[in-house]
Length: 104
Image (cartoon, rainbow, N blue to C red; front, side, top):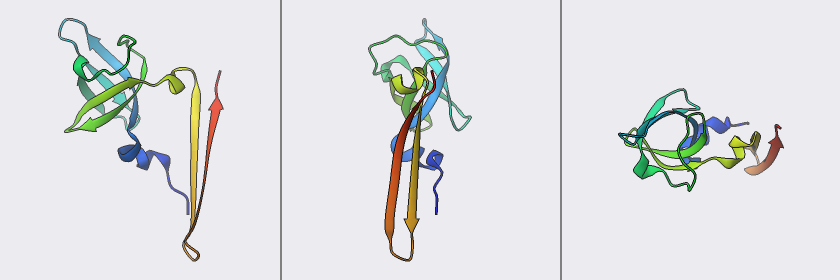
């Protein structure tokens, strides 16, 4: 049995792209990998680097808003994480593999 990694987003946090950011109001929107848009305020930005349109980020969704937002350096540099989990129900054996692919 194989699981789709995107279903793990609620536990691992979301990945998305900054769609917009207004420097005057300090508010913006993120487009998530689930194709939903999430509002955020600069107070939720946890990275030292500034907010930029198009930047890849990781974040949590709390009450429908993006919070705990951090620059996603792995995805900003063209890396893809592959996670595969195999579960044998008859033996309850669980195997997993995690790999990192550089897409430069």
